[in-house]
Image (cartoon, rainbow, N blue to C red; front, side):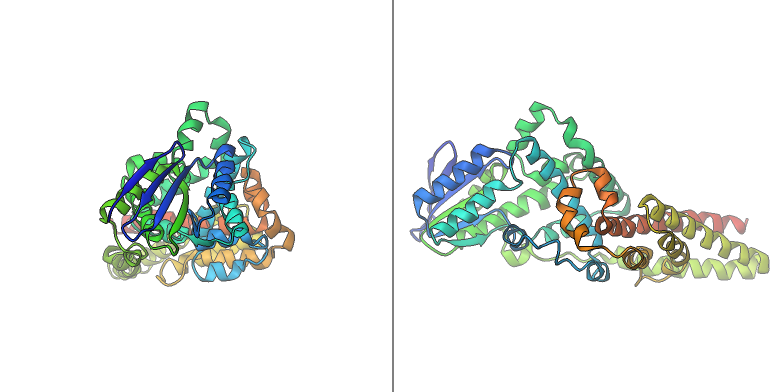
Length: 394
């Protein structure tokens, strides 16, 4: 593949061996100038295809204003996607608050690219990997404590945009928005860099390279340009299929899911055999109390309905012994029925994610908070109960 580059302040032109010409525009995600420039170039160039740094889900959300209204929160809980949606909302919150500082709509350069492509009847290609796959690959590669750290880092980011300095804003213009949010976590978990940036550079390069048409414009964040150029030039990236594979939870995770309940039952049996009826009963009460109290505290932290808090307390001791069910799923469903979200709650999501208060005020988001924090509480309760139970044997 021949790679002839013609540099401009805003784009790199790459001529592929098949005669295709790719103009790679590196944008600043928080810059009105970038957004205006993207529209101007696409309308002037009259290209065949416009590739945008959006996955199909995000492209649909740009084109469909009823996205939140059509969301089925019950289905999300049942499909075990509550945590990923919650993380997605935090990322969207960060981007919206930064964009507000610049008086620009989040992702305006991508919106301009899509609208300009429609004006000239160009093919629109969502060239980025699905955000759910990217987040899942990050999540599944982490241990419990790193996952906990990531969650609290994301929660802390809810108030971080108000303290951003001018220097940090300039750096952010050249970085991927996800990387900007996860920068502190990345220091202690460098694997995030590979999944968040390198893999997506490969993915974007493959999608752009194989896009239809002879004249293509690709609109991507400036931070992705060097990687995309590299993988288009030397053809060393992975295939789309490889990059879309979700890693399994790992044998250790699968074993632990069954090992912990088996160990708990084993400890109960040993307690009754070695310590008698009273020791066994004490162990059971330690298990119930620790799981129930911490799961209940998680629900309380999420400002759950009283019925939900009771459900979390009652469910946690049982769900912790069943690898197929989580306490958060039970409490989330109870919260959804106890405080059934109204249409206005779904419509208000895009505004409510702008503030910490809004996260807890919105009934839809609060259901996600209930799921997440009940599960965290139940996990902590399990870890607290085991040493207390073993102590009974001494």
